[in-house]
Image 1: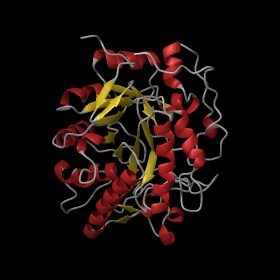
Image 2: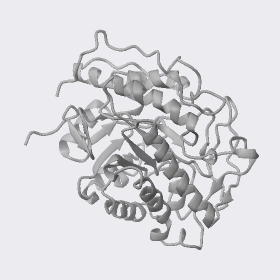
Image 3: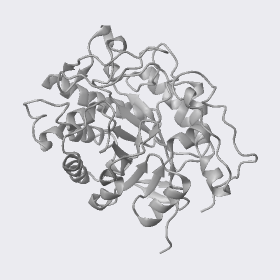
Length: 375
């Protein structure tokens, strides 16, 4: 068998990808207001990047309480689903494949972003570390959240299920659950942010219950081979990492193995948000989790990759596909540039979050663009 590379097709669940160069979820905060609606600008942004083996959209909150940033496109109203339909049609017309990331930020929000100015919700009434993006130039500290009741946990699981339904209605090819970066699912996983004494807190098995219930609810809408989960064992964002990272996430992987998912998507420890770290815990790199994956579940590695490191990860079998975030922001035709050995556009960090077309849909592409990326 030939050694795979980034241009080798990949069977990801029931989806065949033409290459292994993936676009990960990237928060860009350019929804149309009011209503946090996906619109034509978002459709054009994703259409431009349709040469990716797979696009995974920015996180789409499944609940009005799931928003932690201004102008983030949701998936909790019919109008939002209709907006996403424009996005999926644009990507499919350009020959691409696209999953939506289902998101709930939990405590990493602010009253200004919540219905009726209420406190954000979380497993326990423990504030996160950091600031919420409530408006351009306004970043107040996270407040103390309100602990979810058992009934509200069940309601939140149902919100994920309904979000999955709306995603199917909108024409997506599959869904990814955001279980990373200190947001609600990871808040349940961590013994630092989850001090519950009921069936959702305490042991790692109980802290994993919420993730499993959400995943099973989504699997009642989508076949498991069209579902992925994103995890960040080395996460530092939000101040709520579990005290035993390795033990927590090996348990999570083993439990998810039972469901036969398309993939697990790992954030590498060498990045924190959109920054590269000079020092990090290599013991939590995705390659150490790869041997734990069962069945046909593939591993996606994301965070700080170059073309060379991505090639090496795939060739060695440490990853099945590689996601390139900042590179895709600045290079809509990234697979073509990689194939041609062409230089990459430099990204504009100041335009990452919020704004309009500048730094979003105006990055140049190669001229002419090749019809197909060579295998």
